[in-house]
Amino acid sequence: MTGTWINMAAIVAGAVLGMLAKKGIPHRVEESLTRIQGLAVGLIGLNGVIASMFTVDADGGISDSGGLLLLVSLVLGCLAGELLRIDDRLSGLGDAVEKRVHIEDFSQGFITASIITCVGAMSIVGALNEGLTGNNEVLLVKSTLDFVTCLVLASSLGIGVAFAAVPTLIYQGAITLCAGFLAPYISDDLLNMICMVGYAIVICIGLNLLMNAKIKTANLLPAMIVPVLNNLLNMLKIL
Image (cartoon, rainbow, N blue to C red; front, side, top):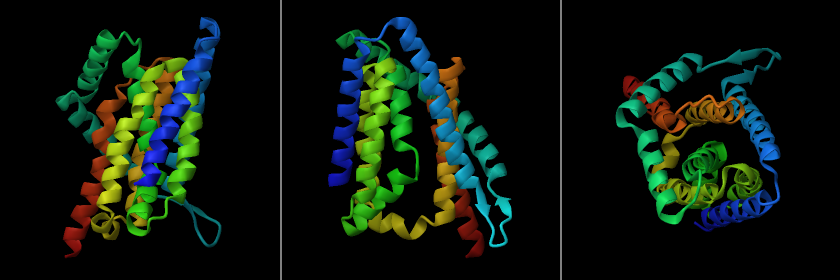
C-alpha cells in the first residue's frame, strides 16, 4: 500500500500549502478563485463523462453507451442517499469537528476533496495494480494530480480538504488488499461505467462551487454502486 500512503501524504501536503497561500488572499479574490475552481472541476468532470461514454469506431465514427445507465444510476443513487441522509450525516460530522477544533467550513472542503480524490479510474486501476503486482506508478501519478488539486481547493475551502486523505486511504487501501478477488470482475466496460457516474458527481461539485447550486453531492455516492449491480445482473443472465 505504499502508493496509497504516498497519495495520502500528497493530499495533506497540498492542503497545507493551500492553507498557507490562503492567508495572503483577499476575500474578494478568494470568491473569484472559488468560481474559477468550480469551472475547472466541472470541465474535468465533463471530460471524464465524455471519455467514459463515447468511443471512436474503426471507421472514425463516434458511438456512445451508458446514457440510460447514467440516468438510472443518478436517480437511484440520489434516492438512496436522501433516504440514508448521507450528506446530512457527513455535514453533521463536519459541524461537530468545526465546533470542537474551531475549523470553519470543514464540511465543504472535506466532502468536496474526498469525492474528487476517490472518483476516477486512476484510484481503482492504481490500487488494483499495486495489489496484484506491487507496481504503484499509477498511484504516484495520481498523487501528483491530487497534490495540485488539494493545494488549489484548500486555498478557498480550507483545511477540511486535508482530511480527504482518510477516505482515500480506506477506499484505495480496500481495493489494494482485495485486488486478487476484485480484478477478475472489473472489466474495462464496468470501469468506464463506474467512472462515468463518478465524473457526473464531480460535475455537480463544479456547479456547487461555480453557481452555489447546493447539490448534495454526498447523497449521490450510492449511484456508483448501480453500474456494479447492473453488471452483476447481466452476468447472472448469461449464467
